[in-house]
Length: 208
Image (cartoon, rainbow, N blue to C red):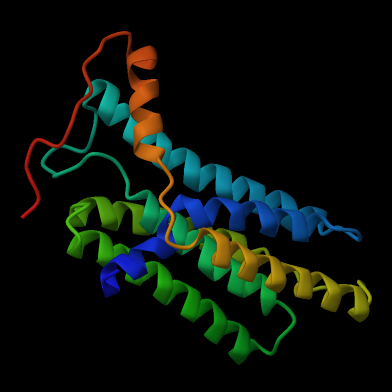
């Protein structure tokens, strides 16, 4: 595994989808953070849904921004920029401001690294990575802006919740890192049913 392949694996749905689910579970564990849990589910739906929609529109009907080498938003970039800073923000939610900012910044660096790796590995064009990056950054900024501190939740309960989140994240990383989720193949299977014709639009200009 090369350095760039190792980095791009941090943006694969094989690891990010379980992390998304685990973050939701930990936010909703008793006593639940209902507001944060709802915000997280909305953020995931906005980010993931936008990526899927962009890919389906192109693959089914060739719809995309004119003048760009485009097949849809980079899902690796968008989801990496959503998940890793959000995980850091939830873990550091009650830390002092400087530590919380540093943790989120490290998460953002992972997401940026994933985006760069997609270009280096010639999986996405720069425009696709930029669009995915803007999407992920906008959604994670909205989620983190509304992330509440623990407030009246007993400290012992909050420590237990954070420990569960950390242990689960490590287990997910151990079991899922390096695997590849067949998202592109799944979308290709959906396109003929959705569009009503067998044509699947593909990239018009090959990546240099």
